[in-house]
Image (cartoon, rainbow, N blue to C red):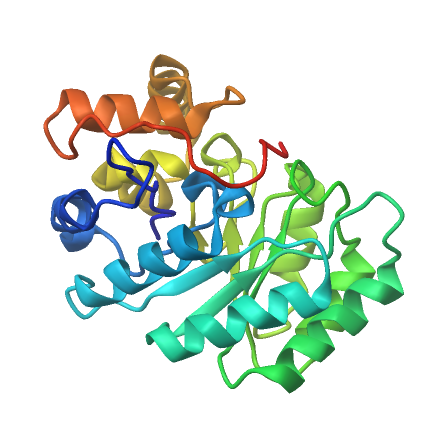
Length: 261
């Protein structure tokens, strides 16, 4: 699955032309489109930028499911964007926990329970730390997977032991690896959601089909080449896409909040 970057024009608006071109570039090799996640700078977009990117992705989806990312500081804010995604025609939402190092594990469960009660869309649990400043434990993830309407877990903790244990738990909820360099060390995952899919979706599919060390080393080297493990990975993906002529050179900074990663 591809966590789409968000292309801007010279005025800081989301470019529908470049969004459509990017989807055209990757759609044949991916199973879902995931706009406005971390690679799409979802945590720092204005409401207008966020809504435009979701709407443009739905409009040019080639029939693929659209899973809208929601990264916001608190449960009411996440619910607001989840309902907006529903109104815009998204098929699912992928949501982090509320922001803050002090968010407890019970609060995380209550957060996802509230999301399920507040939107009809299935929920992809996005377990990460750089943006939210916290992450769910294995026990918490198992509790969340027991809630109705949980469609998948994007497991971006970066801890292979946690990912393997969740994949082996038999919850019936698909586990998606969120780091390209962790695929070989997490056998049993059901998919991959990483920024490399914006550039080389076929390579990501090959790694999933044959998650061994030889191909993992190649993927790691390609990620290093493009700077995908750096803090500004999303800008680096956009620059490479612009170099390839997939998007216009539209890397103007968004008008939202500052980088939270």
